[in-house]
Image (cartoon, rainbow, N blue to C red; front, side):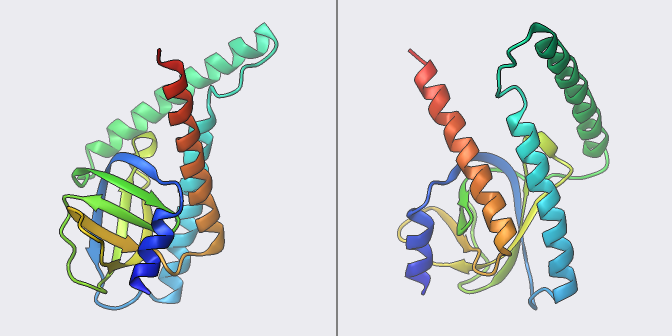
Length: 183
């Protein structure tokens, strides 16, 4: 099964980048109430990342609409910056690490996992919303010849899994568009 988890992870496109990420070892699996709370928060984080990722993506056809969208975009940027600065004074972010992740798992470079099969809770703080981490429960799984740790997400809620797949797809699409724009 562990080889299957690694293969399922590699068969899908992945979100690649550096984010603040931490993994907390769990001695016992999350109880259903805690898991439901995390899923509800994750749904909100994924929706927020989706909204923030889509800003500025569509070109309005009318000048007035474009000007209004630019004003709203600027106000939202200011609010997010204020929110992030406020939170940074009250929270300590984990270190920023290079990673690859999708709805099947996460590969964190330079991270030493607690042990094969260990249950962990991954917390990822994306730059767009530093104060709202995406929290995903998983299990440490083996990786063939890498310099990091691999965690498989084998028990994610289907809505969370789909939200992650949309997030990964949008990031992949943006990376392709940026590559095409470069000469």
